Length: 109
Length: 115
Image (cartoon, one colour):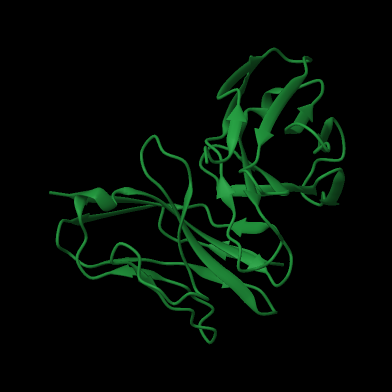
């Protein structure tokens, strides 16, 4: 069955520290992976997707098919990065997304 | 472009009543997705619709739940005879096509509370 696992419910770091939000997936085909972010009192919004291989707000994520992972990384966390982060998978041409349970990132001053 | 609009933002119903949740997709988007988020859980897919068609309803409960996306007007998620377990946040997302290059844009959600 297709599944997305985010093992950490809460991740707390200090400002300037590196941060890595883990995401593992289970899917036999070629998935599309996304990271969505939800800041306080805002709607869920797309942060980045693996096919773009882009860096948004200093965040990057690399798809590792061998480890079936798509971890989100940032070398120096900022307080404004505090938010809920959701990893999501889309199965090939299927439209819907499969979400992980989310990780709450708290960046302390 | 106002983005995906959902209303109401909060909806309170008593057990046995009906709940209607509305979603207006972004302008130019003809694909709509509904997701449900239970407390402490991630978003779970419910149904995927195009104008006047249900494409995938594999995530919809078999009873009491229905969805439509008419030619004119918003998409409606309807829950009949609500029960306490229906309390959740319901999110709608839209995209212009089903193309994998097109990300889904989400609304603010409707928080449904069942008394």
